[in-house]
Amino acid sequence: MLYFLIGALVSLVLLILLSVLIPSGQTFDWIHSYVPSIQAVGSLAILASATVALSLYRTTTTRHLQEDKFKASEAFLSEAKVSLEKTYELFSGGDDDVPPENSRVMWLTVARMIVRYQKLKALITEPPHIEIIEENEEFWRYKFYSLLDRNSGALSRNYFLSPEHRHNGNKIYKKVDCCNF
Image (cartoon, rainbow, N blue to C red):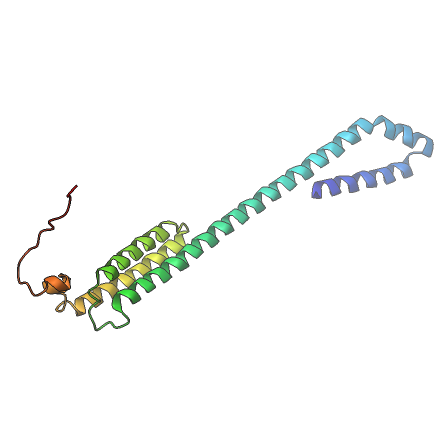
């Protein structure tokens, strides 16, 4: 656009100068002889304007796509952080000094939540966000380790047995009706 305006301005200035310097009858004949050249310059100016416009369009489009990608990564980062926090809250039951509840459903839910976190983490694409989530993961990994370590005495073999099998000693029960067809 700038080249077009500069070309138009130069053409206008040249026409004014020529009309002053050359007598009026001869000016139009002289200009008329250069019309193809003037049209070529005008076409080049239009080509330059179109090139600049296309370049600006591509730059703006690329910038918007990068911003959208960054925002999506940021949203996944936020959700992944919240996911780990919720997982720890569920696992700890809100009290770090008590062992996690001996519930199969709770253990399965925590495992599923960790898998969902890993899927969210895989969707984070921006390098700064990847660094942030890795630091956050280290923090929560330590919190989980610390909770389990503090309560390691309570996490004996009996803790992991189902309630109906806790008091039966070392007997191992086989599932009998597994595959009866």
